[in-house]
Amino acid sequence: MREKLLTLTVTIPAPDNFTGRVLIRVETGVVLGSYVLRKNEFTTTVESFFESAKMAGAQIIYPDNKSTLAEKMGKIGGHHG
Image (tube, rainbow, N blue to C red; front, top):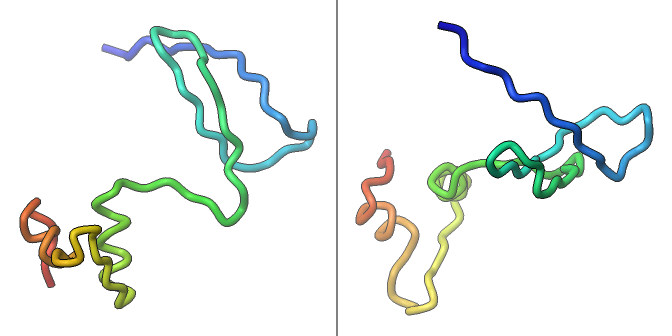
């Protein structure tokens, strides 16, 4: 069975020849807001962000000044490697 498609009309602050990415917030079929992503912006999950930071050699220290990213990732079942 084919999924029903929702058609939305969204007004964004961009020129007519805009090419790019837009985040759109929709609730029960109504557009509540939109955000045009800049060229250096992207979206990801929190887990993927932490994993990317870890792979890049970053060490995130939480406000308690005791827990590190690696410890937190271990506690929430993050990837190890």
